[in-house]
Image (cartoon, rainbow, N blue to C red):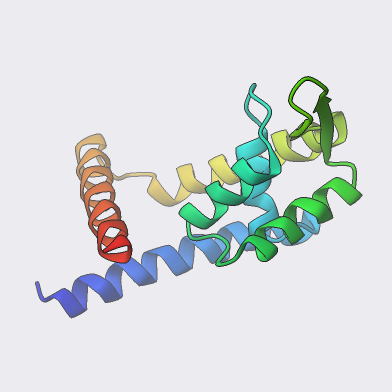
Length: 147
C-alpha cells in the first residue's frame, strides 16, 4: 500500500470519527477543544491552566495557548470547571465541577457507545493491531513535528 493511500485512509477514519464526536457534542453545546479540556479535567488530579494548555497543544487540539485558554475560560464561565487555589504556591487548579460531571459522564458514555457500535464485529486482534499501528504512526508524526 502506498503512503498516499495510508494517509488517505488514516485521515478519512480520523475525520469520520471526529464528525461522529462533534455530532454528539453539538447537543451539549460543547466544541471539540472544550470537550478535550473536559477529558483532561475529569481525572482525580486537578490541573493548572498551563498544564491544560500544554496538553491541548501537545495533543494537537489547539495550535496556540490563546486558543486553549479560550476553551478553558468558556467552560469556566459555564461553571463546568471549578477552580481551586493553592495559597502556598499561589496557583489555580482546574477540575470538573459537579455541573461539569453531570454533563461529561453521560456524554462520555454516549461517545463510548458510539465507538463500540463503529468497532462492533472487528476482532480483538484487529483492534489491538490497529492500536499498535496508530500509536506508532502518531509517535513518528510527533517526532517529525518536533524535529
